[in-house]
Amino acid sequence: MILWPFITALALHLIAGLSALLWGHKKQAALILGTTGCVMASIIGAAGAVHLILTGGIEEIETLWHLPIGALRIGIDPLSAFFLLCIYLVSGLSALYSDDSLREEGRHAWLAPPLF
Image (cartoon, rainbow, N blue to C red):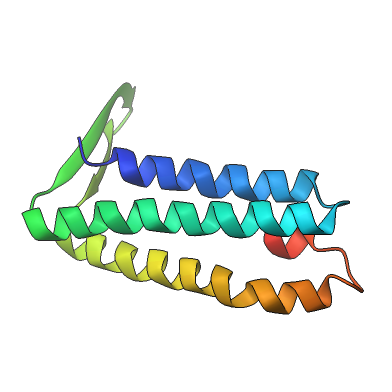
């Protein structure tokens, strides 16, 4: 199942954001946690998107929980994988680019909300 990289990337983004928020009183630690987590999640998600684009398949998850209108289905096809690849590349590169800016701004402000 190829959806695990996307689920892992989403979880890693959330964990990195929450850890940066919790470690907000230590600006350097919050910046490292937020930036590293975002870059790692972007790499994992981009790798999953590239794999799905190259294989050309459609991956779906169907839950056992049935809604009144049918089962819950979540899927990714090559076109949505392409857009996910763009999102992961932009988020990873923006995390790397903003690292220096936030280091400068961190001397005067609390960094946890922007990192979250």
